[in-house]
Amino acid sequence: MEKENVVAALSALAQNSRLDVFRYLVTLGPGGAPAGDIAAACGLAPTTLSFHLKEMKFAGLITGRREGRSLIYSANYDVMNGLIGYLTENCCAGDSSCLPTRNACT
Figure 1: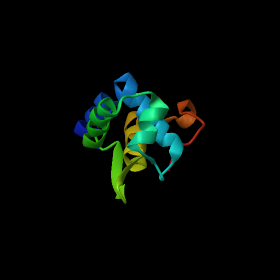
Figure 2: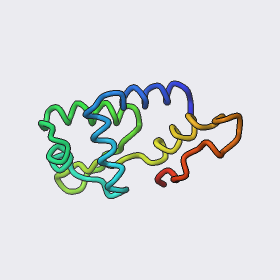
Figure 3: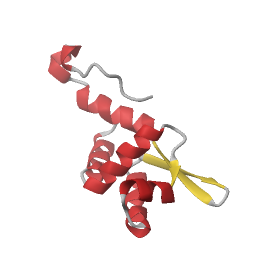
């Protein structure tokens, strides 16, 4: 992952509501959810959510697809795992014992 992409992703996640939305989408898996469900689950007004979704899409953290009349948003696991990999690439001088025992989502 390129440093510019890492900075964009971290910047997008460095806001309480966006972090909540991203973590919620991660729990849903690749199926994702429509914007209305996300807004309800995270306690956000639709216009506020729209702004946050746009920022996360720009950073590549989420994707959106049309299903009928709905836009379904889901976490972009490739970008998430790339970010985690970038952050832990040189962890503990190559000694993997310091890494978390849980695997990132795939």
